[in-house]
Image (tube, rainbow, N blue to C red; front, side):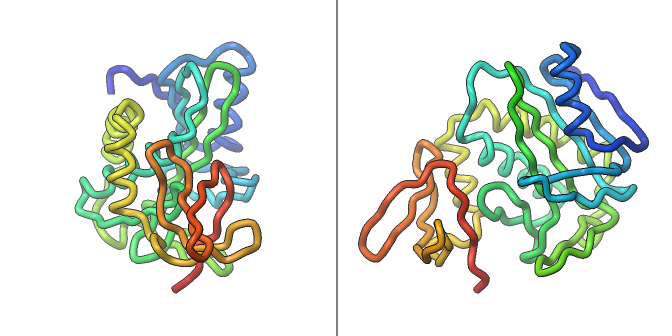
Amino acid sequence: MANYKLISFDKISSTQTYALNMIAEGQAQDHLVIMAEAQSAGRGRYKRPWVSHHGNLYVSFIYEIEDRDITLSYRIAVAIAETLISFGIKPTIKWPNDILIDGKKVSGTLTEYSGKFVVIGIGINIKSNPTVENYETTKLENYADVPKQDLLKRLMKNLDKWRKADFIDVRAYWMELAIGLNGVVKYRGEKVDFIGINENGALVLRRGSEYFLAYGDEIVIQKS
């Protein structure tokens, strides 16, 4: 994409760490992309290790922002999902933005803010998928022929599209693809019903007959 600048490596510790270091050193700019063929210290949410062998997509997008956006996770999720759909794949979304195929994780996202920038780290399994205890994973190669550069170009386009979209459209698409709706989730140690997300991106939960909102809290989708 013409409005993106790409910096690519064969192997670095982490595209996310590299991007954050660029921001700290005053070298970052809007629409800068850091990509690596492999990572030695890839990480996901809560500093969980992200296994990063050659053949998959490991990329961090730097965007200049005015304010933090609590709806960003949903925007990223639908951007990735639409990208996979364009290859004939049928993904689902696990709150807030894990992408699954046939109930198995194929993509994860890490979003971090620094100064006037946000860094969106995305990993997508193309050629290989890690073995994770108690968590099934998969790869795109099982479902379609997905060239990495084509995947990246479509992802860039869709990130630009959905970051700017009205949230009413983001929410509708996210709800269409989300798993676990109207099912039981764990919220702060108790079991409640997961109704969805509202027009501001808050979780809509139900405890018995009581509906309530949660902002930025962790929920755990229960296996059916």
